Amino acid sequence: MVNVVIREVANNIWTFSTPFTRLGLFRIGGRSTAIRLASGDVWVLASTPLTAETKATINRIGPVKFVVGPDSVHHLFLAEFHEAYPNARLLSVEEAIKKKRDENLKWHGYWSDSNREPNFGFENEIKSCYFSGFKNKDIAFLHAPSKTLMVADLIFNLPATEQYSESWMGSGFPVISQFVSLNPYTSVHRSMTKALVMNATAMSRDAKTVASWDFHRIIPCHGDVIEVDGNKAWQTAYGMYLD
Image (tube, rainbow, N blue to C red):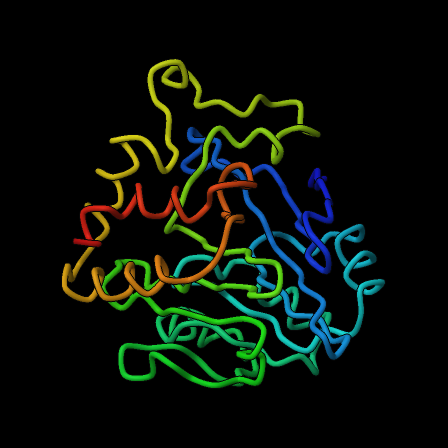
């Protein structure tokens, strides 16, 4: 059984937070996010299991029009969402689509190094920035009306307190939790980010794009939601690429 914490973090934005342990050791948590667009349709960043409780909540929000995978590694549960919402437009990065080629999913579009700025119809409310220079090919999304940034592996904010709040496990890293903090203000975060950068020039371009956006909240897939000073957190984490 998957423990899920469902919360309306802002007007028209719901998060679905669950435990997720990387390599059986690092308790980083997982999170999906659903947004009700002005049209009444629902946009979902799908990164966690589609539990019965998750599905019931999303169905109450409205009809799902977009199901989005945010990078090349957060694709484990896209098939569940696709099966539940076959008429929704399924979107992700090109590398994720290649990994899922044997699952017979019906894709409606993608981001890639040669298709960095596709238009899918939600851009007047949700902007996207594709990070071609980042190893996992992440996309940062901005919900402009609520000034909320959504990311997968571009920002961590651990420990994952909310994501483990309904679990029998604690939210810290076993053994090393007392020595390591992984949030945008730490040197550990900057070192991890630097290790994942494959092209510094491209990374600088895209980090500057996100830094220019107007947001105060960050919803990461891993760790607690950053409710205030989100742009400051971003500029701290990516300062080396903003000069």
